[in-house]
Length: 221
Ligand SMILES: Cc1cc2nc3c(=O)[nH]c(=O)nc-3n(C[C@H](O)[C@H](O)[C@H](O)COP(=O)(O)O)c2cc1C
Image (tube, rainbow, N blue to C red):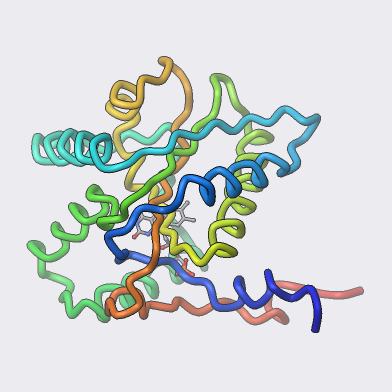
């Protein structure tokens, strides 16, 4: 079929947590961002803002995050993360089993689980990352718009053969981020997205969490 380039990319996508040590060409990053700005938003408010970071800034964030974590500071997200319940909880538990199972990490293996926390704070060793944030005073409406923007950004990155990992863990300490990234007090940190060229030999990249079937989430009247 013609025109199924995006289909072919998206049907096989999954998160990537190991990368080749190679930066992404500026031109590609520019095109990804430029096209993502065409995402729609209610009343064209365009509530998204984005910062691109590389090695030096990433290292600063990693260091500050690990210090914060080790000092016992509790993650303090700008967006409320309530405990998962019902089917959300079931899926989250399943994912945990798959993820730790693949890495051979047992339930009680605190040391290895801690290493996963640190790997998150190390951006999964990606060469590049975006931080998605929003201006002050956003409401549910704008959060939905930000989700659309993030989805378009993701599809664009996939279309250039990049691997991506969205990381809520990268916005665990928003005050540190605002300071290191030079952002105004009160802007809302939404998510980190680490990315780069995928290391296809890495075991961790073989994790492919399942999806509901179409019949389970869709009906046609
Ligand atoms: C908003 C958001 C935050 C996420 N945060 C993390 C994270 O902090 N660390 C991580 O390893 N994966 C994180 N993920 C990845 C999810 O676990 C993953 O997308 C989900 O299990 C589905 O797997 P797939 O992306 O491989 O299809 C996050 C994904 C999203 C969309």
